[in-house]
Image (cartoon, rainbow, N blue to C red; front, side, top):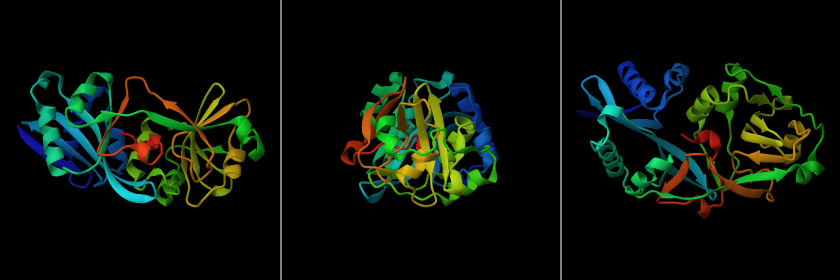
Length: 289
């Protein structure tokens, strides 16, 4: 067995195929579509155990350049934790975690884990913490509204404008945001939100929207320059909606947003060496692995 460390610049086609077979066996999906986008870079690295030509265990480490309370800091996001079904209970994940923690002993980290692995991650120093999602009621937004039907127009996933907006993206939040989200943004758009991408009027930016009943979710807002709250809300399709939920911290749009508990089924937010409560922000949903 060999411990292998690769990133988007050093991964070979053989390594990518090995990784795809492992995640297909464990999670039922493949990174093939992501690899074809050719956006995987050196910020996302994998620590893997390969037995002959087969990858049998893996942990991903994303070097997230973050804004925390107005200052820049690197956080490590752990993801793609997988062990081949016929190699479990052999200490492989422990071996990989020990390698990662040995290489980055003082780095603050976080991850999202299922209910069945919370105790495992506790052994490596991670603790579950609650999340608070920002929102506005439409009543609160009413003074800012223009056309309640909105002015956004759909963008196809592979429209050249999508990549242009992602590359030109600027960060304006001060409490909590990500400075290098390009690759992971593409992952989410390709796998989860390909039919949720819209362009704001006058080429002001790109927004990722979902609706559920009377709730409009602004999952991401990709801006090359600042945008006023009234401009955003005036462009959103708010007819029949009572609440706008944000998938990021909108502190640069307004200061008086409310927060509510954010809970996803079988997903636990766990941190090591820091806490979002210290800066009062919500981790952008489209930067999560």
